[in-house]
Every structure is written in C-alpha cells, then in structure tokens.
Image (cartoon, rainbow, N blue to C red):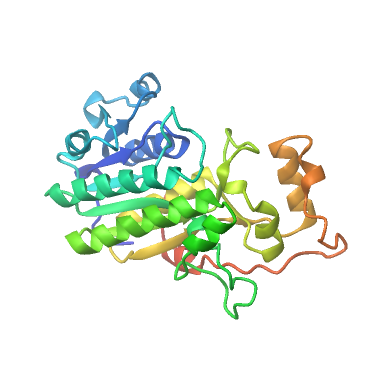
Length: 298
C-alpha cells in the first residue's frame, strides 16, 4: 500500500449509497477519514443522516443514474467514485429487459466521470456472474479468473439474466472508460452474504450448475467493503478483481446455504452430486485480489 495515501484529503462519491454495500461503504469511508458524497435514488436519507458525527464530512445527494445532471452534481469535487447498480424500485426483478436498464445507467455514470475533472479513479462493482457463464467452462484447463468473461449469448440462451446484465454493463463501462481515459477498476463479487439474502436473489439462477462446476463463490460484506477501499487506495490496482472469501463446494456448505435461504430449499439441491465426496474441486481463482490485499490496513 502506498504510504503517502491520506484518506482525510479525499472526497469520494458512493453511488448507490442506499444499498447494503453502498451504506456500509459510506460508514467505513467516514471512519477512515474520507469526506463522502452519498448518492441515493429514492430512499435511505434518514438512515444516512445519522451516521456521521461531523456534518461537513457527509453530504447526501439524490441522484438518478438515468439523469446525467444529477450524477454530475453528486460527483462535483470528488476524486473517486464507488459505483454499484441498484435496480429501480419499480423494476426490482432481473429479466431480459434489465440489461438495457443497467447498461444505460453504467453509460451515464462513466460519461459523467469523464466530464468531471476531479475524478481520479472509479471502482465499479460488477459480479462473478460476468465471469463464470461460458460454454467451455467445464473443459477449460485453467481456473476461471478475472481474465474471463461470461458469454452473453450463452446467458441469453439459458435465461441467466443477472449474468447477462452484469456482463453487458461492465463491458459498456470498460469501453467508455478506455475511450474517455477514465481510470477504472472493477470488483467482480461473489454472492453477497448479507441480512437481505433470499432465494429470490437473481445471482442464484443457475446455482446448482455453479455448485457442480466448482465456481459457486460468496463474499462477506466486511471483506467486500475492504476490497473496494483497497483497490481505490492502492495506486498499483488495475483491471478486474474477482472478489470472494468462500466457495460453496461441499454438500454441507450447500445444505447450510439452502437452510439460510429458505427452510424448503434443501429439496432443490443438485441431486447428481455424490454426497459421499468430501468436496468439489474449486475451479475459480481470486489470487489477484488476495495478493493486492496482503498489506491492506483496515
């Protein structure tokens, strides 16, 4: 970690700050000494108002990712942006149309960052589902990592809408960042293990196949937040980072997760797996992120 980095001299924007990741990022950044512009869409203002002892350290903005000027307002004076997409309240479910929504939001946000003269770095939250869905995933010699991309046509064929949306949105962001000269890194997170986790989470479509392929990864909220801040603060960070700190690759893991999601979920566990096996071989790697985080100070 670069020893000269001083959080108290940085103003950063968190968008959307009303989600579980965004809210916790705001809390942690404030604790580290940052000044934070918390950008929310429709809710969360009351919750955010109570988390900063110094009112000058936290400013709350109502920003619509489909309203370019509201994004510019939130970014004004910021040196960095932490961006994660939250589906609109009137369209909470992932379907074949969500990709258009998420791509448009990513395009607007990256275009705004390109126009904001003070932005030095963007941390773009994507998903492991933008990595793992490929026709050749079972026959690859090497583990899947951040060098791989999900196949959009494969996702469309099997109605893996979350993977399709995340892949298209992230590719849109990368194309715009490279074209406009925006310094961007992405965090491709596993399934977030949080208080609002449910069987309806769109990440879970294809869960049985992820499990059988050895690529069903999860991430704890605290680790995910630390990863975001690490890649922002470390000047050597670049490209994409697969982010997870646990893999569901034993029958016990799968049963425990199923019970957490819903009491009846255990009946839908993959039946083809030999329960006598101790584990399924892991076929996905997060070495790049782990190497970067070795010296990260929380």
